[in-house]
Length: 125
Image (cartoon, rainbow, N blue to C red):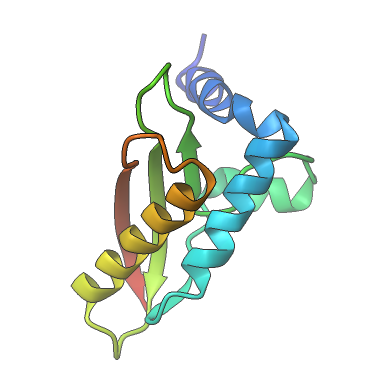
């Protein structure tokens, strides 16, 4: 097994929930909410996302959003990659994105523990 194949396999396992419409819809809602945060220029697409735009894959995770559903009663694990506007304070953008994701998931599942949200600002424009 090549490193690329191994990476694709790991990604497909993490992305498996997006095959279900409810999780794909939730990821899309999170992406839309994140894009509306002050100081966010756009969600950062990775290589997989760029390739995905060439070959459409229904139920795929939005660019820059990776969500892992909770195990049992555990929290959602969410990774967000954004490019911020140069005029914005990066730390404020990251905090705003984290708070937005937490509110979005709390609205959907208020009885679950707070999600573990990681925000990475990958660039400035």
